[in-house]
Length: 240
Image 1 (tube, rainbow, N blue to C red):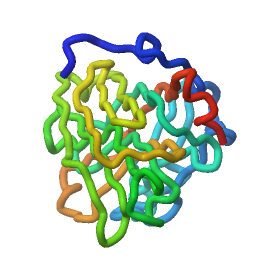
Image 2: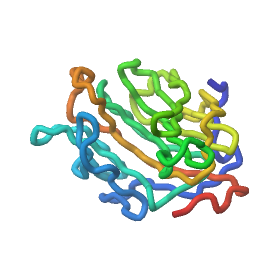
Image 3: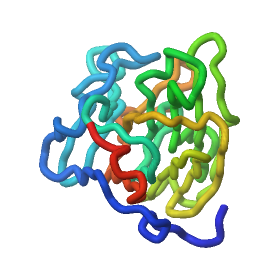
């Protein structure tokens, strides 16, 4: 972990896109409910997505014998290549299910070179089974029989499971840097994408029923804001 706290502005970035989730509905010009339908043990549903009092709430809840999950993404609305991507959020309380903030390539299954086909950049996943103070990060690319991945990285941040915290990645042509509350924890130079990708916020669930034996429903992943920053030299690398 870096000894000093960083801000995107001091790192030379300027704000190019944001959502503070004002109002009481999801902004359809920025987001759509992503992947409606079965997902492992659950079912992604608009019923598990709400915007209230300035927060996006992605739930895991039981209804009519199903576990409903909330997930939203910016595909076909906002895409970016390189920059500083940050959310401020309160993580879920239960083990089994997990909150996730990630960036996805629309071409990730089309080929194996991440520079050309992109990568899945897991900015933050909160697997509470690892402990209340651990946040995970990862990068995957080349979906298919030769899928590649960095090792899962765990950042120890005391108190991260309580209250609101910021989770970010700095993505450059050379590396990914993962940050929690402005502190740099990991730097990765593998699987670097050079194409525009989209943002995802989601509540996730495993495929093994044993893993949700201690999950308490309903639960929520609460997001205060999402912000994307870019350097002036990268103008034109963000947009629809």
